[in-house]
Length: 136
Image (tube, rainbow, N blue to C red; front, side, top):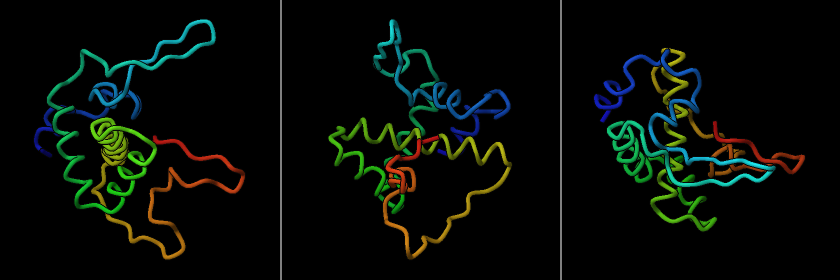
């Protein structure tokens, strides 16, 4: 799947941000805003289907083998998301990480988990002021 992802992305400089890469990979929903109201719809219809397929398949594997992505998936399921929706959220997280790694031109290095942190991802942890951090 790495070969498919590499071929479909080609050059990371084409994308100005992780959000644009996620939109190209079809792992973000459409958003309509008018008159102060915001509505989220289906996934974007015209995107790269091969990159989307590769990220979804890689996400299913990561959920089974990675404690980080497994906990992230289970957290979303606990919030009431359906399995396919939750795996799409995992794929978006993977796409954000992929963008960062390609921008910095470095390999992935698994970081050991600190003893004082909880097992679910950092973005889902509540800060001391009561807020949470964002995905990308």
